[in-house]
Length: 613
Image 1 (cartoon, rainbow, N blue to C red):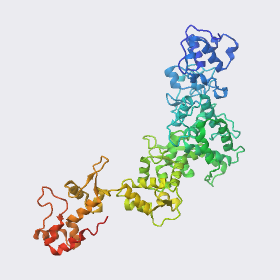
Image 2 (cartoon, rainbow, N blue to C red):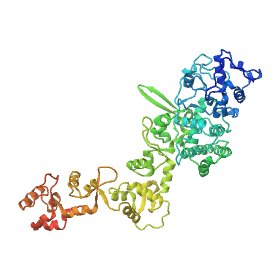
Image 3 (cartoon, rainbow, N blue to C red):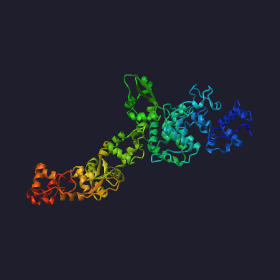
Image 4 (cartoon, rainbow, N blue to C red):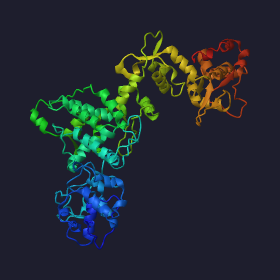
């Protein structure tokens, strides 16, 4: 046995750091140092945490053998994966009075339980502490660890922390490259994150490919923010990461960052769960992005480069990024932001190095307005497409955080390409999509989405007349379109509201006709109050009835004079003996047989000449 059994020896807590468990025992037993618990003198100067775990496991009173294997595996990792300076969650220390084993990992920067960033510098004396010299509850300056100020962790960093600790992957969809059943061990997950942190670009890139970014929380938070997006942010964010690496390779760096990345990645990524990453990487490996900056000619280049803080609107204009995107990026911690108050107003300053290296991430994610322009659709059509789930990467508005939809640019581009799966050789009769929607869209619900879906599967022949116009320039085969319309509307039913427009009747008058069954209608099957009218019943209504106002218009008479003349002839409105009154004068067509001069017009349905289907 190499450990002494102290008088007070509570068992180790679940997930507790073995080192700080000994420190806790020393504090409970009033020992000056935890090293008093070692029997061998040479062990007292040892910094081997793996050996310490073995010692604790040998002792029954520690209950170390009953600990979760995940916590034990942390100390079986290589030393370069473990921190040398203490980092901790002040809330955990205040509430639970223990230090967690996961805080020993360099890749651990957040507390999942309290959703805050870990701390490695005392906010009172601004000093860091050696891991083995750190006290349990307070800094060497005497400031309690439990009252240190904390910063709320970003959503991306929390997702990355859950992946490191438990292997959990964010919501699965077609865009997520990491499968939920990846079966990566703790060592493999930590090595993967370390690899990405070493090669993921940010404002402090090392040309040699080596990395010290995870040694301190300040740099680790910065680096792992990029790792979280590139590794777990889905296809669009991984492509954006590759784009940044490509730009770095063309900016005078002696080391080609993209080459280093994919060589290192392939060396690390041996399992089948990385296949999606490899497919995307191989598809993008030959592409390069062009980067350009706008320089102010009034200042020297050194002055411009030295100005690392840009006003929000200036940054938006210079880098062509929407202000809403920049605000969201600052909220998520993607870009550092300094807010200053001057004269009762608050000004936001954007950190230029973050913006320049993360520009691809921002430009890859479009808001609804930008996506609508790229697609060539109206705002209402864009809203319809988002709500119907056309785009798998679309993120809906979140109250208090982001007020607009967010869609990956790469998915928009792929969607446009998918609208013309077949090469068109000959199209004798065609029609533009906007013209088709104006002609048929009012009669058929969801016709817009139906047409796009049929184009994608190849049932509706189409081609883009002008790619710059997007969907507005989509040319459809008229014959295929008519076949589609007949297929999806076999009964040619039209809503009562739309029928009122076609017959040029007031909606209230149409409602009265439907209510009193003067025109036959049916309930819809979507649990709404709207009713539909088959076209054949609309034709029967036109054949049976005459609208007084329409007849007066044909005869070029005022409606009042016509009604008086008809009353003198004994031709009374349909509702004259009913217990209800219609909004407009309605007559039955057979009543005009005794008025030959008028019947000539009525017989040939001239009163409906201005109405067609």
